[in-house]
Length: 252
Image 1 (cartoon, rainbow, N blue to C red):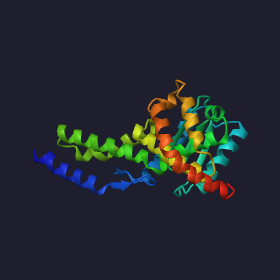
Image 2: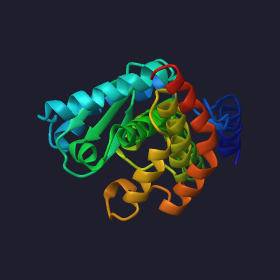
Image 3: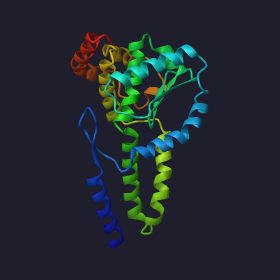
Image 4: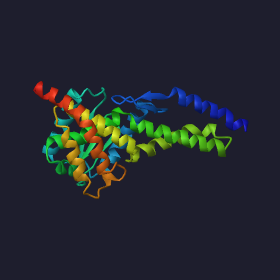
């Protein structure tokens, strides 16, 4: 029993000291993983991720559009500083991903799916928000804590294995594309504010998610339903429109 209880106190202390606050929302989150760790592994996994996604896009117009919109959101959206980079890949399915470390990947098919720059800005803002809200680090931190608790209950000699196992788990977490529904809603909200500050119409966010609701695509497997996103969008649109109107008044 002593072998279990003493490490448990250590984990409780870690949980209490690892709490952080999500920018823009104020939600408390548990983080035992630093963003630099996420960024390092994101760099390592990027080449394989690009290959798996059909390679870099050869459509110069799409690449330029994504870069222009992404740069504008970063510049005017009050987005935290990071090594922001935007990649367009050849996958023809409508999908987009945040790998962490400022890396945002947009499929060719997503650019085609978006009817205008505002809809594409909604997608890009959403993925940027996953990064700024530290969702990847949060997911790994939760998984690592749960895994350590299980390990303590089953193996008294767990200490020497924890670090190697956690490193492996972090890589698997980064390779997975699923975020929790809470995180998806949070990214919708924060991403809407980012795009609005940059002069993109936040009302277009609801429109693109509504059209997604009529499709059976991998991108939506773990996302909130169309009704949930619509309800949240209606609640948030008034706040976002104030930011959007202010941006337009400045000439954005």
